[in-house]
Structures are given as structure tokens and as C-alpha cells.
Length: 134
Image (cartoon, rainbow, N blue to C red; front, side, top):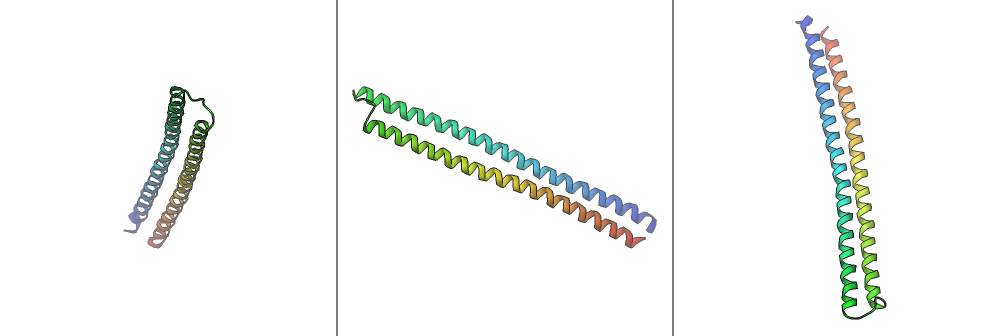
């Protein structure tokens, strides 16, 4: 039994380590995909925000022109207020996106480190078990 036990332990340990590394890699790929989706979402939100602002400002200009009112005074103040609100919304979205991306990067790093430590632990346990058989 002792002659076959060591090679079987080595094969089992190797298979476990490889499985752990593949699992870690798959988790990291999922986080990379989540980061790409977050970036794409940020770009999409920015484009939608610009379209809304252009539409609102265009409607305000058209309304002022139709009413025969110049684009100054309170009409301009309303437009300026809408532009400021859009800028604030953009800043908040950028900040939230940055926080999300940083969180995903930290998670990816942590998963890589934990996976490495699991693999080292498994290899060490396998080596210890093999040394007890001999």
C-alpha cells in the first residue's frame, strides 16, 4: 500500500491545486468582466445624460424663441441651473464608478492572493501526508 500511496497522494494534491488555480482564474475573469461592464455602463449613462441636457436646453431655447423672449435673465438662469445639475450628476456618477472599479480591483487582488495561499496550503498538506505514509 505504501508504494502506491505516495504517487496517489501526489496526483490527488496536484489535481486539487490545479482545480483551485482554475477556480481562482475564473473568479478573476468574472471580476474583469464586471469591471468592463461598469465602464460601459458609465459611458452609456454619460451619453444619456448629455442627450437629456441637450434636449432640455433645446426645448428651453425653442420655448423662449416661440414666446419672443430673449435667451437671458430668468430663462438663462433656468438653463444654467439645469447645466449645473447635469454637471453634479456627472460628478457623482464618475465618483460612484471609480469606487465600484476600485472595489472590483481589490476583490480581484484578494481572490488571487487567497487562491495562491489555498494552493500552497494544499501542496503543503499533500507533502505532509506523503511524508507520513513513507
